[in-house]
Length: 235
Image: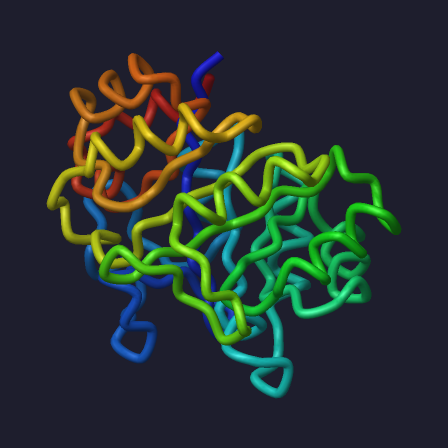
């Protein structure tokens, strides 16, 4: 079944509006939303009643010294299924994440393939995903990963993860549409189901992603501007 997954980008305890991966410019989501009047994650989840959310702990992603939003995300997980992106850099980070969310995604921004392999050996791999975040068609990473996006997709076939998540940060929050050719190739090369986010504008984009074999779409701006009905989040 195709999944429409609400993204909660959480920074300093509140949900912010992500645009093009420029995290220093993110503002509270209430100022950009037509469907909620709050930037409180729990209140948003109660109001929109999503079946599943992708919670990005932007403090943790920026660095361990920047704090975390674990208490907020733990509360969110009481109301819906939660995929947690928490800037995994070690297997310890994976354990911390799995204690508060249903699944954890390991981002190539902060983790290399050694960390991914160790996590698959020490944790329940069925609760692990891997994120490939793209910026200007290249992998965004602070590690020594030097693969092209498609090389990384194929490399991840070696690991028993649950889903592959691909996010085009260049398009996040822009309503600029999706690169269908790239996504089709990723689906063809991946042995894992693929979840995609970045530039998903409306129902026609969701239909297109479903038709080419994407397992689920990460959405935020399209929901907040009512181009994607809130009901789509409810399964």
